[in-house]
Image 1 (cartoon, rainbow, N blue to C red):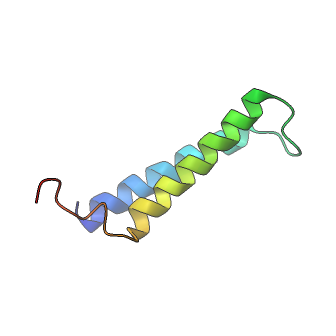
Image 2: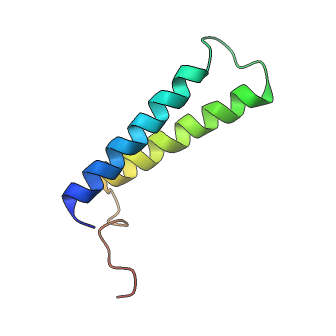
Length: 65
């Protein structure tokens, strides 16, 4: 995956995390739904970091080398 494509996908994941973070209220999560939203925010941020930084070269590696 080229650097520009990784940047676009990373920004999309940051936007997803931001939109989901808006739905989570401030404070301690009080329901399973709030915990699920926090999990989605954390997962989206993890994927954004993975695409933007590509720390282990996972994204830039060809699939079947």
